[in-house]
Length: 506
Image (cartoon, rainbow, N blue to C red; front, side):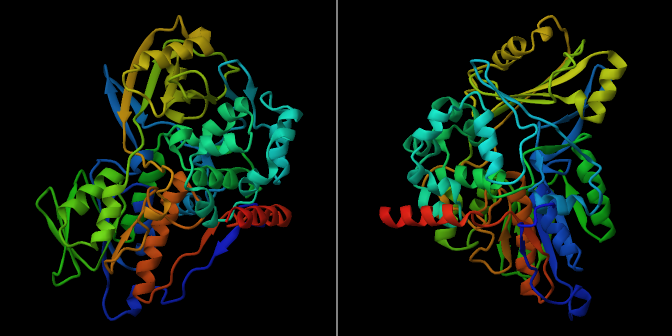
């Protein structure tokens, strides 16, 4: 939190603890991913009785970790690489509950990007202050030339350089990211390398991603923040992030029911809600936070007749998931070359999107590497056609890291998932928000609309805290302060140009 321009969103006032009330509210949080854990933390710290119900046997949702057993060996496993950017203030606030210095995270000094022609971009050594960070990145990139910059339509590109949230969605949500970048004459080679990384972090092709979402990402990571473009990674398997938080919450009397799926939420009981799960247990609660993925949310709402309004239920039913992605983790019998980066982003190497060398930063992978002399490598393929086998990604690995061609695969694990939200053009206003038509019912997660400049893991954390804050305010309890990058672009000149261009269009 080094950016003095970061925006503080004050907490609502109220009692510091539910002990000041004549009764103790009880809430059920459905889902123990980042959003659910943030919501549970926000409520439990104010003395609310909380039960967390999670269908998996581990915490963290899509950022959870577990142990696989292969041929007598215990192997740490998760759903793949996640970047903890310094701009993720609310996620970091959650982790600081158990690790104030964030020693569980390790900086990745660079994450180069390489395209099919072998051109490489780097984030190392860039200035931290916008707009010089973006300008320096462009000027030293092999995919940009000064002539390319001169051809960019500055007036049409003004919204990209002067983002204001949520206004940017009203300006650009109707078109897709690819069409927008073409319309401003953004260089094709740079579009393929730099911006595709953003769109595919949403597990979608640029033609399937809202330009408003892309512009917000550009604001968060480039022009809206001086936290820098280098991120941190977890230096242990992801269960090392969440198990300490579980202990912390258990001390606050939070009840965890793992391996249990909520089927239905009814209203009208003595308490405001009655929650039914697949174990046969029935739980009464004053409030419910649904912090589940799109499929889980649609299933619960579909089985819960009378929950919310018809319009709201239609919003839930209209949510879409992104195309499948594949994570292929390989335990190899020999190391990759020492100069290989911990993380390499790729473009033009289908179906491969990035390569992680886990033994560079993850404790369990490093220990396995030391004991065997091998290496642990992970391949990600986003928005993938499952007809393209993971063998194609391995072939690209061998092309980019030729020393792996002769390596023997000691263990391997392939995960295929399709549970990330898809933000197609024209859907922003139709997304459900944290608040719902049902008093006491809140939503949280990275699929949930919140009119703040946040994305991915940080959107999950922010909506979780926000859901807790809504409920706390309802009970007269104090909320929790939130932080984001500024909600509008820093440059008055660029904002003025963007506003002028918007008026001319309208």
